[in-house]
Image: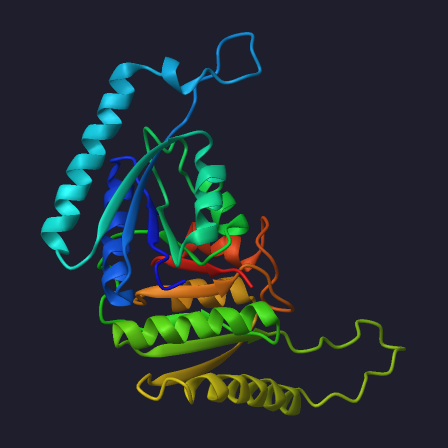
Length: 290
């Protein structure tokens, strides 16, 4: 793991350049090398189900990819001279290639929109597939790289193992960035029966809320003990976890969630917290696998 790089998917688009700046800051903070990857999508010939060999890709496309990579490496070296920068041009599916590379990466960074080599890098396509299937944490960079600078790291928290792993990652990020951390837990109080002939269960909503808060604070305290430099705030909210985290992401520099969860934070599928944040968060989103 010590030699594993921060990998960034790059295609020269505006979104990719923002992702590159984010990835460089991550690599510098982690004292890790950076690997720039340009994935050339193989063209498919009409009437054929099989992609054309890489050798038959347009020479102009290959030359453009090499030029974009060279420019990106030069910029990276000039802005982050302490970071070891490597570059690769690969052929195939962008999502599949990046997911494969994530097996030997500390972090995988992609923009939320892209052009050219990483074709269709729109939220809901490549970036969503990578966030769902990568073997390492994935940062999908929304907005500007320095958006929310000085703001907190926000993490979605429940009782699932995935949330525990995501919280550990969030604490590491907060310590590295010298940022505060906000742990958000959403819950839904039990509803009253709608039929008048049904006796309501004896449930003290206030007591249940107190139990939810204690559960959050206890879980956070165990992780906070490992990162005493991080100032932590816990936030228990009533309602939908997706909207609670999206709201909390305003002014944050990063929001962190697990790829799967329980209760308020289910898995990465349409309608899930992770999927929702990739579309609606106001800052970069980190999705952490278990």
